[in-house]
Length: 159
Image (cartoon, rainbow, N blue to C red; front, top):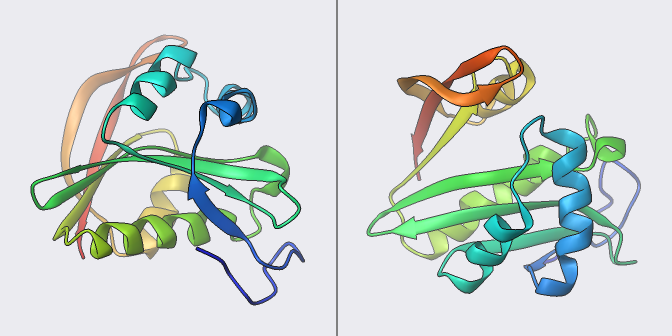
């Protein structure tokens, strides 16, 4: 998928494409920079070998801006991981990428999207709520944290 209008960061033609093994070094660099407890190379390799929707989001000049991993099951899409490079954050790229994943879920005839987010990730929670997600559950002590465990907020929205 291509964006033909000028993006917030000044780039033209943002591209969403399938993730490949060759992308993993760049994906892992972003993952490690933005997540305190990042996915491992094995997590991404497993996702690529499975039926997950693994996408990279880049400029027309092939600069990796972000990525997302989504599982499609029956009629529900579960967004498992999404990240934007630190230098590209707060420029609307996360919203654009999430919109693309919502469109992909709709294209695959999913009826709902769900995701989990750390309770401390207030900027992500605000983004998700602004895009129609609402809280549908709480998983206590779900995520590892520097001081023990952290709750996950389960969020969802219809498509």
